[in-house]
Length: 138
Image 1 (cartoon, rainbow, N blue to C red):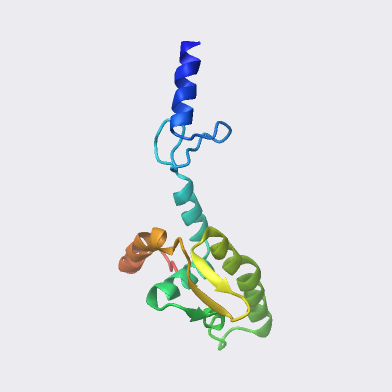
Image 2 (cartoon, rainbow, N blue to C red):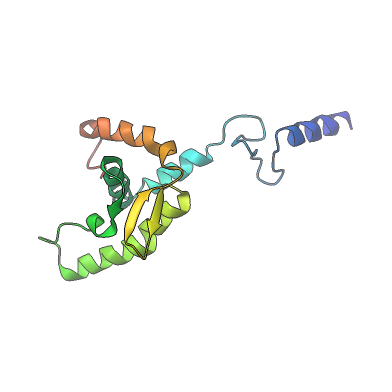
């Protein structure tokens, strides 16, 4: 009984969700920082199209969605169409859902989102060491 009281006290003092084990302050049940923000970031960075969007926003903000299309020379129409479909239905929505961008579909603009500054150090690190990374990161 004593152990249960201690655990309940700890859970309530840390605002830990008993189902997920995560605290409202981004902590796990045992008080360690949650890996969820880092997992979300690397999930977003797993695709070159999203890395390119974030990199472009690091250079200048806001941008037009048309700027994220590949150079037309050397890209056939079918491949360009597939890219646009993925951009509008996969990549921009995923970045917006994560809070890294604000995407105005009607105006066709993309700007840094409310959580962009959380990932800025990682983006800066990747940009600063781009030559040292395997392959092309963007």
